[in-house]
Image (cartoon, rainbow, N blue to C red):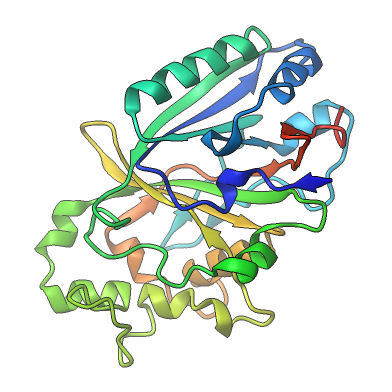
Length: 286
């Protein structure tokens, strides 16, 4: 019986290390993927395959596609495809370092890392702006319906956003609240917030059909820059794309106020295969 990778439905961990990989030109990746599939990681690792890797294997996963690049006069949302995404989750940064090192050695020489991002939980799962993150996340059976496909797999959208925290902090508190659409003091939604407020742009129940995703986003910093690794799991990419299009103002010209202080620098889609007998089930592509 196939089941979802457990980390998908678990809350964000204290720490995470996100590693994306490319395929070494000319490499036959099947052996490396079999090594990856044969390991048991529980909730400490989430694995996702990009569309380029699935295509290179001569396979097809219905619903898997490249991340859409969106550009308007006001915003630029890039597409930065990758072959493989590995999300290491845990409580200790040192343990995550070694786990990623060991997994990378297992994947070499067929796969080479292209980016490593260390993320962390801030306070009680807040964004670095101080606002609560994931307030409207579906839970329980609703989360399963939103994030998990019938075969136990999932699709994940991953973006790295860079915040201008100085610009955000320079705003009066009421202006910051109106950017988010919630009061930082009590996390209550502001009924008369501007239409550009993030909460109003992405209210999942207001889309037709509804656009529920399960977010597992985490703050990141490299010492110089900082922001949010946005992670959204879905039973397809449709709900995420509906929200992203609305944020960019493509349907009505109203751009999400988040873009006043932050912007995405990456954007990737991955298919997260299910588990079978506690191991990653790659039978759909191998």
